Image (cartoon, rainbow, N blue to C red; front, side, top):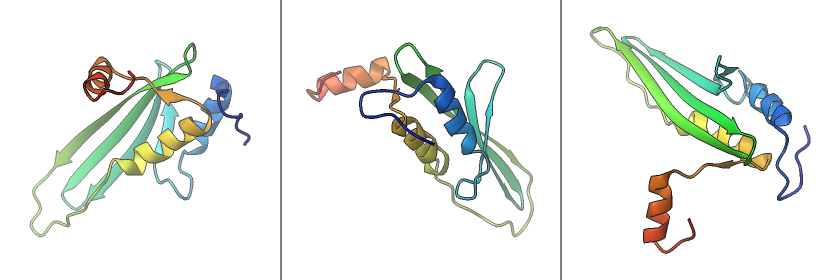
Length: 126
């Protein structure tokens, strides 16, 4: 897979292929799919004795600006089982590889209105 030089974002088709290449790769144990609205959904499911938690990282590409929007969602289903195993999870297990793939292709996250305001308060460019 080739990536463009600095300042030149990859076309959406190349980003599509790169994101789908993350699907169940040996180093990233999560699924990547495209939903009916054209959003990329990275899904990580954890199953521990009494609890099943599904984490979804949803990314929508904005080709006109080479930006993307993102949101993290999680759902849990718990049934009480004595002596259940506990586990730890970091959302970075999903977000880091997806964000690194997008950055490698010259795409950047879209800043929210709150983020722009916060940067102005800190004296940084919005």
